[in-house]
Length: 250
Image: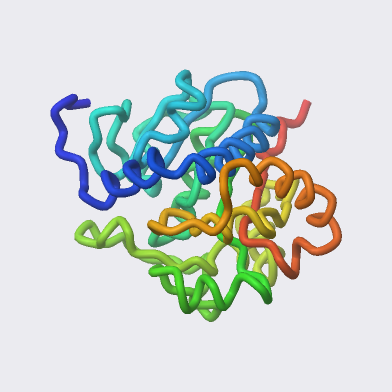
């Protein structure tokens, strides 16, 4: 990796907002801990390392992104992973799946590079009755619930890496769950949790504004832990998805 690589301005702004918003950092730390709790022992690959935020939390991961940055270990497209079969025990992704042009190609690559029993651990936008207006009207990225998350095609090398459809993860674990299981019999959706009912939307994410002071983040997160099992599918703004590759038959 070229340590003098030019960083995309949008990634740089992402990192700047991260450094300037301690409440957001605490909210992300809670999500990172949830992701770390799902890891299996072994080697971990991060896809979509972006501003290098998860790398700060877990420095031992192999970090990649489709756009270059000096803190990355490798520049790589999730649809064409440059690793051999059974190279990793985990793949972690934070706000990445909904940016991939053809998620089906990524899952085929993940099935190849993961060892049996390995996991894909993702945090993604959750499209719920409460979050939909926020993501649709306030967030810059589109929400197209009619898009097919398992469509096939050839990736466009000129496509903007920031193009997205925030509805893809929710469709994948919702109405298209059976189709995903049929397309990828080696994978099982082991866990799906609807999270971030209050603190995350109040923080404004990576917008320049925030409606929650840092001192309130911890108590609000504790309240969310109580409410999420009952109200998450209605109020949640985030999805934690854990997909496991079936262990080899003995």
